[in-house]
Length: 559
Image (tube, rainbow, N blue to C red; front, side):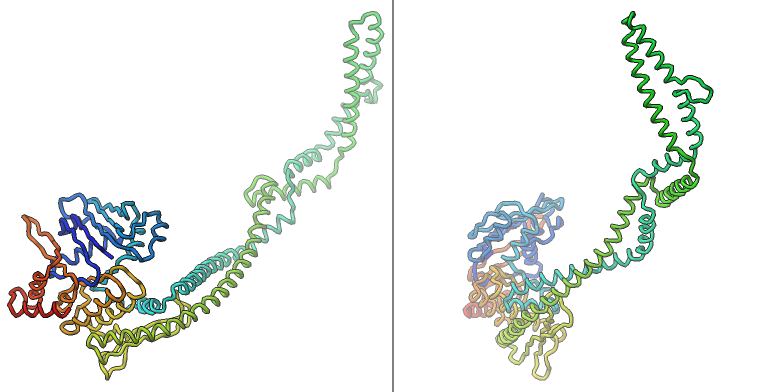
């Protein structure tokens, strides 16, 4: 529960430092005195958006700090997950907002993000504002009430997890089908391109090989004549009886052998020349073989030329520069076409997954429905009893549970709260027929019911008594007091009704005070005589009569 609140430099609050009591407390004050400012400061502790305009003019920053006793609320794991010190008897939440709009949040003096602050604060504090009654018009809120009473969070989580998988799989399926449809328009063209490349079968290095073959075949006769001429020069077979270079060199070697007998210095040259003769013989032999291999073949030349032209045409068509790039392109086309098959397999797998998850979700939804139907009866019974206690003895409150044809994020069920304040009127949707006061009473009944399940340490009602007075207000106060005792919660009601203010075990008074050029908001805990005076003001207005004071004493004595 909230044990202490400190506010500095927030709107009209220069300094506020106040302890809060357990049980049922009330807060009163004139309209505009600053009760909503205090709620706004508590909103900062709950992680709401910070506004630099809320800082008191002339100050550097505002600070709001709340101290909570969270013993027995099973929050240790949440603190451990966020690497925060766990102090059950004195958990401190603090929010600082600078004049430049920057905000900082702290839990037990450790800096945290606004998200972490919010995660912790929503487990500590629930503020029911004047606009919260509008939630009764929201089908999701109505179903949430039923789920709270059904108390099946694990089952609901399983369903929502399954439903989330269905939604994600449907998104993936839609994208896959759209992508496949777009690509299938190109499939025939891609397959044509691949078939053309597969039929041509380009080979690595084929460009240069074909160019060399073309060059040789185009100049075959010239090559043969040249090689024959070289052969004649080397071997002396020119047909004129001349001596070839090899014979001349061999004769030179023989001459050097004879001379070396008397002139040994020439032996080295003789050996070198002998090596030259051997090398020339090898060259002559190889050139002869090459000459035999070279022949003028017009048919082969045409084949090579056509192959080379076809290769060049493909390279030009696909904007590449070699046979290797054509081979890589063919592999890429093959991969793209294979992906069509893979996409079809993926689409089929997604359809199967959706079907399986949908079947599981329907089973979980049916289990949810069973629990909700039972819980709806409990809600009807307890709310009806509460309405009787709040002076609505003939009111009818029903929970209509209908099945939707398709799966919804929360199952198959649609909950609708039906209400009738009169015997002659059949129950109709609550939002359509209930007055403001009736909505307030229904909401209080629902809050009293759900508080037993949620176990929130602190609940603040901001003028939930709108539209009611007299005996009804007293009955509402009694229900709030029972919430604080029965569910063990701290309940604080901000009210303008003396019947409710008198029921609080503690009474806090909010007021304004002019100080120089500024107007400041203050809060104080009232003692008994101060409470009597405040209640008398609420009963009679600005002029407090003795009769009003006596009436106030009677209200307090009825606690």
